[in-house]
Image 1 (cartoon, rainbow, N blue to C red):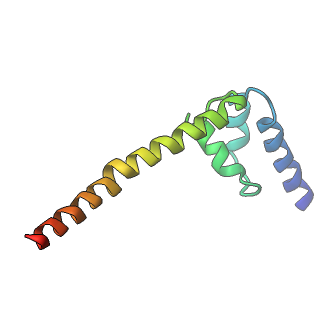
Image 2: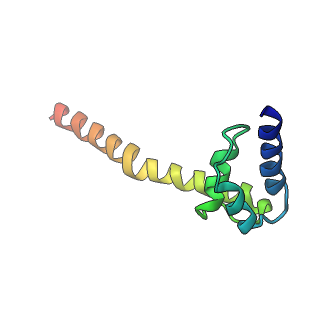
Image 3: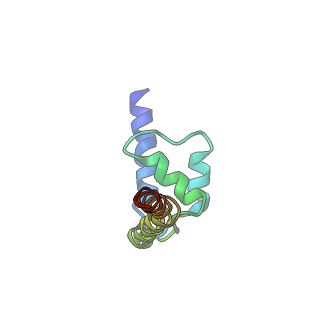
Length: 95
């Protein structure tokens, strides 16, 4: 049983090792579940959902842009407004 599981993991890794992922092959493999080993599952879901492109060479750039966008959202929606509230409270105390 372990041998079969390891073969299945190897098949998933082989798909990810290709320069361009065969989406049909990915879907077929994924129909019976994605192994939760070596961080395969998150990568496969990102590809299946279109978050990562089929060309694996583009993944670093896409991931970098995603992190930049996330950092921008955190600043604009969380940290910036919190900083403004704190400054406003300090101004109110000083009056």
